[in-house]
Image (cartoon, rainbow, N blue to C red; front, side, top):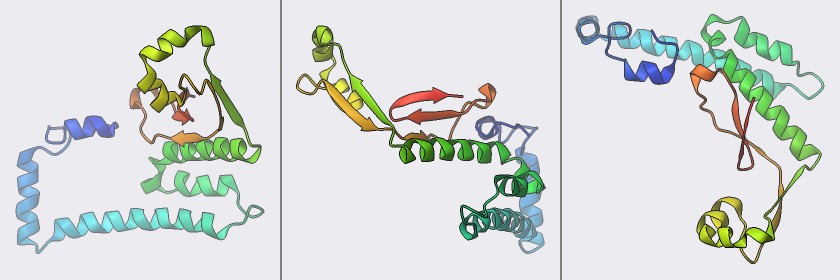
Length: 171
């Protein structure tokens, strides 16, 4: 099976994933055994859901004094069903730290353009208004800084993609 979910979606019915001949066998077995294959899938899903629920409950039941990051991460590190999600948990933790820090200390982003470049701004006025929030009449804007988690990164780059306001930051 491919480790990339996008690649897995592309090769779902190939030999290294679920070729149609095996899917057919599973379908017959499921029918003959009164839903045994479906029951297995639902049971596996339920087990993973319970593991995630335990991690969520740890967060909800902890205070800022009792929450321990290593204990939270160990719930993913030590459980085989969640270990493969550890990289996503690290991504969420890093995102959370950036967002809490920038909002707690009230970080601002000042965005403006060079008035000598107004001709270029006019050529792209619709874009600059919608994306940069800058117009001929409003040449400067101060924004509250925020990090936005995109949720999808290129598996090959092993990087972490987040967006700070509308500007991409790659770690």
